Every structure is written in structure tokens, then in C-alpha cells.
Amino acid sequence: MLIARTVAELRHHLMAFTKPVFVPTMGNLHEGHLDLLRLAKPLGDVTVASIFVNRLQFLPHEDFASYPRTFDSDCQQLQAQACDVLFAPDETQLYPQPQTFKVHPDPALANILEGEFRPGFFTGVCTVVLKLFHCVFNGGAGVAVFGQKDYQQQLILKHMVQQLAMPIDIVTAATTRAPDGLALSSRNGYLSPPERAEAVQLSVALNTLAQSVRTAKLAGLFDVAAAELTAMEALRARGWTPDYLTLRHQSDLSPVTALSHAPMVVLGAAKLGKTRLIDNVEIQR
Ligand code: PAF
Image 1: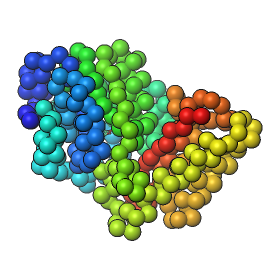
Image 2: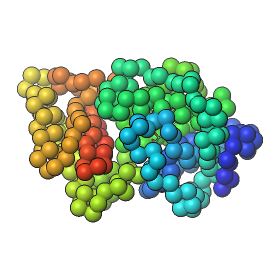
Image 3: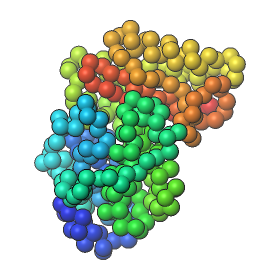
């Protein structure tokens, strides 16, 4: 595996290929990232991963400084998956001057859910992803793989490439889960053993809400707001602090007020102790 530390090195190496497939990460890799890589591998002629902890997507009180940085073990895991190229720039490469030009996604998509509780988060994500895409694809075509766990992120990035006419296919990979059902995340490492045992309850609450939607009859007979409150209350009763558990349309994450045959998704974010977890469950009716 070639490790490129600079944009020039990366571009030089990728000149020989026509269809890069790219998996951007912030490192501290786990099975979920490796599943993204496994899905990516057959989709292009060179597999590129990146590791960059992106300051722009952290609020001042968030965990940028303490975000786990595990470069050596990340490299070993990427190598074991036969990743071809790792792009691992430092901040002086990616942000040689303060990044004053930024990508501001549509507020209707970016200021709700995660964007409501983490203002500016998606501006930070879109800005770094656009820049990473320029480094890897250099204006050409390719494929990039993101996880479904970050549901709003993958949707916003699909809008970004479409709106900016970038010839990049965004592929969404199913969420990788621990045997008990907890969605894998680098932030799971912050959980104490009792919190880790409890953490699956977020996905339990989301699945319970999703199941009540699946079994409900159509419009009028199902009170969405009441079902969302019940789901949040169930978590609160177990000591969680939920930010939201909500039923949305898959296409634009707008609230579902009455059930229809449109594809829906239940999304949730909640704090357990100091750790904030997110997850989601898709519903086809
Ligand atoms: O999902 C992530 O790990 C990050 O948001 C990403 C896409 C690598 C951008 O920093």
C-alpha cells in the first residue's frame, strides 16, 4: 500500500488509473470501515482510503483534540484489506491557509437533525469531502463509498455531487453492527463497559418505532408525533438524553405527518453519559 502524505504524491500515483474508488475516513478504523473498503474494492481500478481528522466538522466543545488517532493499526488493517493507496495528509497539506472558502449545503437538508444539534457540521463535512474528491479524482470520474449509519451525511453528499455536476457515484454501504445490534462507530470506544451493554438500546428504540410504523394501517390511524415521543421517553427512562428520534422521508428527510407508501427512515441521536450515538432504520411499506 502506498502512503501519500501530499496531494502531489497522491495525484502522481493515481495518474496511472482511470477509475479510483475512494473511502474517506477520520481513522480509528473498525470493521465498519473495512466493510466500506470491501464493498469499494471491485468498483474501481484502484482503491484509495483517506485518514484525516477534519477540524472543520467539530464544534468548539466537541472531541476534535481527543478524537482517537491510531495511525499504525489503521495502516495494518488497510493493508490486510489490500487497499492500494492511503492518503494521509496533515493539516498543513489540506488546509495550508485557513479554509475560508466553504461548501454550504442546502439549509433545508443541512440545518435539521444532526445539523440542528451540530450547527455547521455539514458545511465542515462537505468542504473537506469536496476537497478530498478534488485531490483523489482530480476532476475526473470515480466512486466514493460512505456508510448508511451517517444517513444525513450520505444524502447531503449525493446532493452535492449532483448539484455541482461532479461525475462521482456515491455508494451507500449498509451499517455494520456488533453481534448485539449496536452500530459500529469510532465513538463507541468512549463507552464504559456498562454503557457499552446499554448502547444497543438506541437501535432497539429505533427498531420498535420502525416496527410500529410497518404494522400501522395507512394515514390517520397512526399518530407519528406520539410514537416519536414514546420512543424518546423509553430511552429517557433508561437514563439516555435523546436529541431526536424521528420518522422522515428517505428522499429529503422531511417529517412524515401521515403514513403513505413513500420510503421512510427512522433516525435517532441520543447521549449515553458523555457519548453521543446516532443510528437509523429504513422502512419500505
Ligand atoms: O464520516 C466520516 O468519517 C467523516 O465525516 C468524513 C466523511 C470522513 C469527512 O471527514
